[in-house]
Image (cartoon, rainbow, N blue to C red; front, side):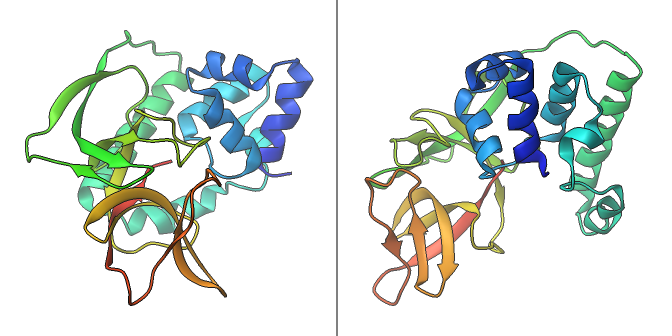
Length: 223
């Protein structure tokens, strides 16, 4: 089984609801739902926490979704700043493994505006706002606040999301896109029916990418 199936299996084996597990991991229930459905995969620190909660080793939890030999080819393609982030994360994981306890810190995040999950907007005045954030801050290039409900259950209204700048995107990724001079957070889909920006909340229509619309990519949301 892959990690999505394993999370659901071991959660139920422990008698936890998705809400119970979310509280133990300090994440939103929608994150657990996304992991179990296979829409997203948890960051490695959450995988480690879940393995502890389920009282199993990490390899048993991740199943076929993670191979150690996959790390080096990916790492070698990173720029120097991202390699430093990977190194810092690895050191933190080793410290935790060796039971090195750090005092909790209150994170702060620079918010570079708001991006719409509904009707379209992009609020950016060039001066980011520093706000408190009680979750883990992943490596990212900029952070935004989501306005609207079109990306439920993945992103809630007013949720902070983290973005890596890139124009190299794949079908199925969650992107920040400029569509007809307004910015959205949407799922990029490319298939036999063409290219389009898709809302996870099905009450919203797809947004076709064709010659009738201008579209560019700001980046990919870190999940």
